[in-house]
Length: 414
Image 1 (spheres, rainbow, N blue to C red):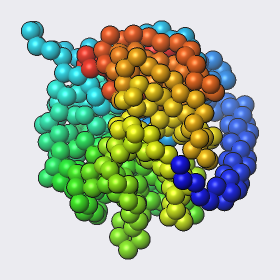
Image 2 (cartoon, one colour):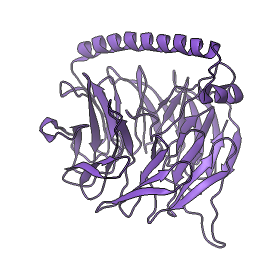
Image 3 (cartoon, rainbow, N blue to C red):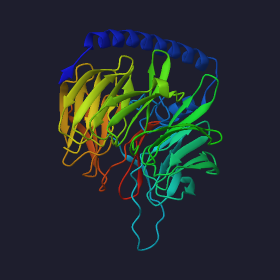
């Protein structure tokens, strides 16, 4: 295992932790003041109905919950859970229901997910009833993104769509020259302009105007792009990190300025999404390594060989990186040193990406089980057998965990 610049990283982490704590305290004080003045927001109503007066509720509008793709919920969801509802898309008699590999996203109390049958669904989080459905040209296997009343996603025929979250009406579509296997990321400029970021099998990475679908810029790589991009905030700049089949981790300014691009040689294709935190990007790739890279300096913090061909995306919280693999193991690594803290062993491989909520790591398995793992020591807290393989990653919102199975069913737990 290679380690460099850890003292610098620790100093940076301490400073950022202090300021984050100060910001959280300020938000808490402001929120308390607003609530006491009788200004009750929609989200506070949801918290009092679903989780008690002091419960924290939030949306999960992107693949890993936030633009940095950290896979960490601000909510604390504890075991045991029970099924609140399940939604089974209609299927013709005698035919098998198409599986769902796309991970769900959740915004404003609605679950959004696409199926391999080419249906894009909007399901009410409260009771599992269908709000609307949209027929895409091709199968949907990648997660969507939601912002400002619009939901964006790509399909296997290479189209990128924007729909109204309220009605499902198509607002625009853009055609690329290859299928879309990676999800959407979204970013808004200080001037209020929103952009959609997505990669395609046509070797291009796209920045689209969220309002019109116009191609703002596109960047060409040397092979398929199959990962959802993650957003990196470092030294007052925003960049996008993504990998693909060319064996490189690409880092581009959100402006698309190619003169400031960075390329990191990984040595194997990257079939999943990197997680970013405090300017450090964490990559678990198909060549059997987990790598931490300081984007500002361009140097590796550490590199751990594992001999595991990763397809699941890592999750990262303040202290720990969580990585799931086809070797049946969910592993917790110290995010400063890369040292293994614990490992949880499932009965079959793990293709689903882990999600952290409170003291629990939620993990779907190819054995059909949804696992709850103690994030401190890796012990099993709870499990539920869906009876169908889980490739999609869980989403957490408003006290509810949503996960999809290869049986084409959407399940909600509370």
